[in-house]
Amino acid sequence: MRNRRFAFVVVLVLGLALQALPAAAQGKTTGSIRGLVTDQQGGVLPGVTVIAISDALIGGRQATITTAEGSYRFPSLPPGMYEIEARLDGFQPVLQQNVQLGLGRNINVDLVLGDITISDEIVVVAESSQVSVVSNAADFNMAESFIERQPTFRDPNSLMNYAPGIQGSDAFGAPSANQNAYNMDGVDVSDPDIGTRWILPSMDWIQEVQVGGLGADAEYGGFTGAVVNMITKSGGNDFHGDIRAFYSGGSLNSD
Image (cartoon, rainbow, N blue to C red):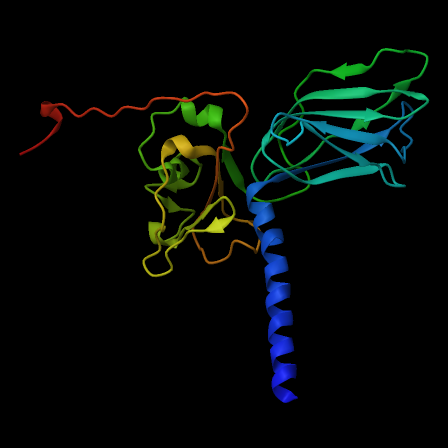
């Protein structure tokens, strides 16, 4: 009887641990968008349908409903460029364009529905603020467009040196580069023995790199320098690729 009880406890603990794994990895590979939906007079609007639209989403869109306080939240979205649309019967719908969501970012996008007397949808084309007002983490993000414009090494981990406060991979006053933590697609690939990383990905795999330090979530752990968080490209329906070449002439080599 005692053995059965012990086996049951072990299975229960393992099951809870496995359930927790996706949630822990989720914050390392996604971002979130939240906000408040109001009318022209500033009154909050519950029951509004808010839609996140992006090529980064499977199916292209994701919807939610505002709460009684008029707030909405998309807690787990893949990084990319978004449009946020809000619709409610009796009000003029609104569409916020150019919402750039970075890896690990938590951004706020407030929406104001218009007067129903105007039938056309309000389209806000100005870029929304990329500064997070819901998190105090000191992060530096490098999206695919930034990476493509830089003279980069073969190791994408070296991109961390573009972040403020890092020199030669020594981050934020840490005594050496061995104090950093490395994550790829939500998996910790740090080498706990010598403080480097287990995997050296190709630069062509990388979609975005996030370099964090002070204020990073506790789920990262195990670092006193910087946490380098990378996600790989997910692909799509269109065939495309790139070519990268490295050349070293005789005058660049020593005997």
